Image (cartoon, rainbow, N blue to C red; front, side, top):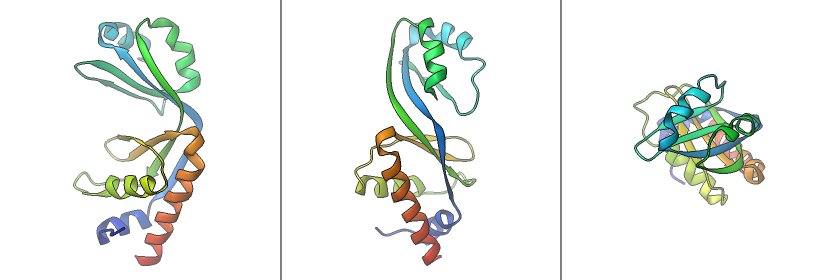
Length: 148
């Protein structure tokens, strides 16, 4: 895999952080938006809530979702997932970081659900694929350290 020198440098400085908890990915019908806003107002890190035209999409700790899901009637859920954070502040002008990461994980046959915050990128991987994903990512980081 050909990796741009700028991306190599970033990856060589990246710490792979694997969160110990399991996470659930949830889609709530948009008709329950007000209920979602009320029930989800006290979420703790790491949580993600996205409102779009068709759904309210959530990523949250599985134990927290177990507490909240009784308040919703129309939802779909997937999990358990493990959350991996690329613990480096990423400039918003960076091009190709996630492309390199996703290509490396595709080589390892690991499906990802990518999330970005203002400063960092994160991925969710099926719990059963977490070890394989971490091994592939640490190999990528170490390879970039050797070339940087």
